Every structure is written in C-alpha cells, then in structure tokens.
Image (tube, rainbow, N blue to C red; front, top):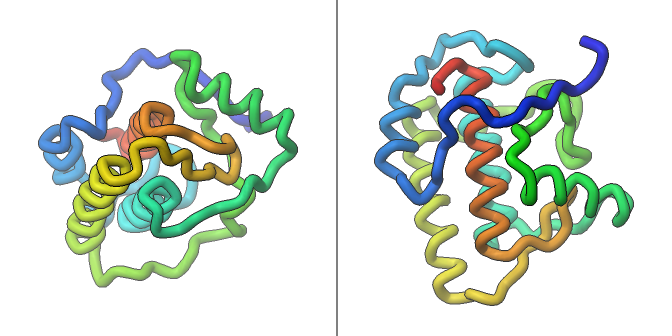
Length: 163
C-alpha cells in the first residue's frame, strides 16, 4: 500500500445514538473473523473502540500529540467533511503491533463497549460544555465527538465487513 487511503462515505454509517443498531451489527462479529485491512482481531478492534471512547467520557484524559496546525487539518477532514477515516492512519498514542487484550472474550468486550457508551452519554449530560482532548484532533465538544465516534466505529466495522 502506497499510503493511507481515504474514501468518501458510501456505505451505511454507524450512528452511536442508535445503540440497538450498533449492537445488532456488533453481534455479527465472530471472534475468528479476519480483518479486511489492518492487524486487529475482532476483540482488539472492540477494545480499541473502548479505549478511544474513554478519551471522550472523562475516564482517560489525553494531551495533544501532534502539531497544532496538523491537528486542525485532520480535525477539519474528520469532523467537517463526509470523508471516511483513512485506512492505514496510525494514531501516535498507539504502539507497534497489537496491545494485550484486557477482557476475557469478545462478548465481554462488546458489553464493556455498551457501558462506555452509556458513560459517554452521562459524561456530557453532566458536563455539557466539556471539550475532552483528542490526541490527534484537539479539543472536541459533544457534537464533534459524536461525529468522530460515528466515523471511527464505521471505519472499524468496515474493517471486518460488518457494514
């Protein structure tokens, strides 16, 4: 691959506010599924979504890890356009290779994802003006985090052919 590929959204997109659809789709994920791109296993992918959700629900505060000008450019393309997330983009807070799994199995990970989404809702209900930091996009408000999570979930669900 010559570099990150980016496409305009053509497939259906996950909407994290429609939780029944999020979890109906995630139930089609099999623990032995092979990714269409990347190296994550299905459980790694779900645990990755959990990890990033914690940036936005107050549990895992972050600092900006890229140049501020680059951050503004990435934020514009991620939040303000209908472009999909790039295949092959590696966020700076992610190390090389797969991280150790934290949960016992895929079903436990999916249940934890459900809890983190509930905590996301509660966080912004009790902190409506909060702008938790994304290590790549900078500060995001509630609306921007929803757009980001919708695209992030869609990207990784596409990774396993779920959409």
